[in-house]
Length: 533
Image (cartoon, rainbow, N blue to C red; front, side, top):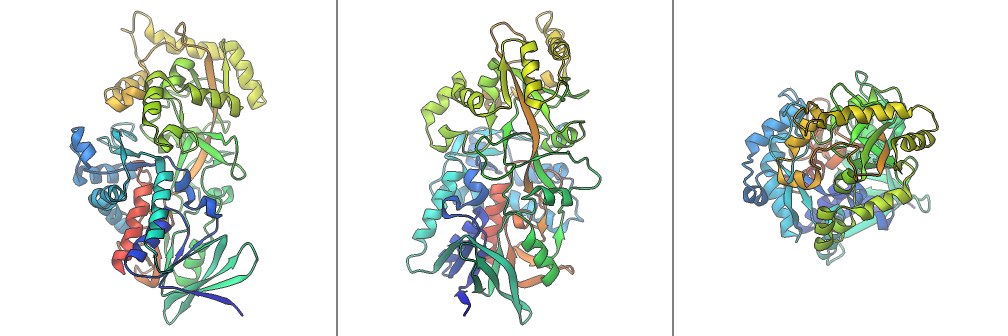
């Protein structure tokens, strides 16, 4: 006899969006079954490993720092940078909802759970021509997103004193049940035993993440009008395989939109202790590093500089002859600027160690550099550029980098500083100077100086690859997070939240994100479900 699990809501996926949905439903008096494919210690999905940056609008911290942000300003930035127009009805509606509700429904909600933000607002995705974030909006959770997950999981336990919550790990949903014109539950499998399990629920919330968890999916969904690199690292979750998206489309008529839009990073490295095949980490590229092609030549004519347009960085890297690039820098730059995204390489923030964090910010993160030299074969150092070129070739298994070419690349950049810096004429230097006008960026960005400045060594080269991360498209939803069919009507009983819904509307970000919109998008879409019920 089949096992049947009954509840008011079935939540498919144990990431941030699924956890928030379950928490809000419990608080509303509903019974909830949450089904997650991963193991209990990895409960929380990608958010459990995420850095915790959030784009928030009109916060007290912005006001304290005299940042005159408003929903109107933010929406203008969002639509322009994402290349959205009114024809993208539901994505635009979700973008508007985000900028209007991120303060009360995300910021204040998190503060109410005891969360705190670091006392600085960073300025990311400014746009190549100032067409991105016109103001700083990037708030960083103190404790990273891992602390957020731990806090919300604890809140789940508090919200369930009477056994209304059932969490099943290592279970996979294989199909959705449909009866009487509405979704009536799902069928799944216990992956530890192979036994089939049936779930009866009048409401099913899809929170299983995105589409691009594997390279086959990434390549199948890659836009035909954009270059695709030969090789990539994987920064998404391998369980985000798109099967339930396609099942909902094929069997229930759900509409999938913007499936080719993705949020990837151009500066990835292989994870030293990978959690799955091809696992990549995203470095936070140093603004002062020279970004080179596989031959050690500076990529141009417009140099690649992080912090302005991640989508453009990925596009340009994908056009290059080889699927890797190099960052050329020195120890002076690395101490101040080098960082790796996520919880594993940001222990001071993750463990909420304020004094050690401030010390490393002011004096340089020597601990991280030692760790990278020990763990990563793609992080190379040498006292000479010729020696560094030899190590770059050894790491890549080629002889592409000629020492004289690497030397000429460094010399050409350093020529900007002849005459005491009065003759600087380099777009990367201009962007660095602009970034340093904002205090938090000045703390993390070196004053422009020659790469070969005496005493700044040794030299460092980091081999980088494009790393996939998030799906920007997904199941189209209305503002109640109800999944819509091809005619635009809601499918009774079926909801989608977080990345499964393209963070709202099947693609609220459009082509580009303002960065930091993903964690709040999970919270906003999840809270919308319970409001609708």
